[in-house]
Amino acid sequence: MSFATLVEEIKKLPLEINELKYLIEKYVIEERRNKIYKNYKKSLIEAEQGKLKFSDDVDELMKELMI
Image (spheres, one colour):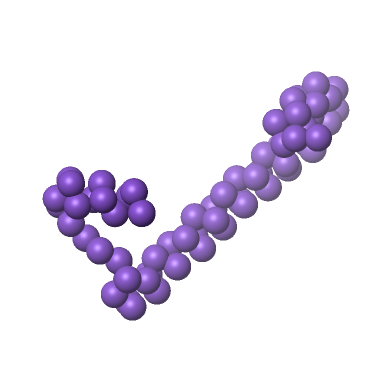
């Protein structure tokens, strides 16, 4: 069962199950926050190690994205 299918099935549950839906939504939001925070911490480390490149040249940025 895919995540999208699971979400659709949860939406069909009776109103008494709204609390469960609410908790699942909060869990998903928290997981997204955790992922954003982990990426932030990783980027700080990469910046400290000099692994990040900064540029205002669009052509150079496009080349970096195509790697």
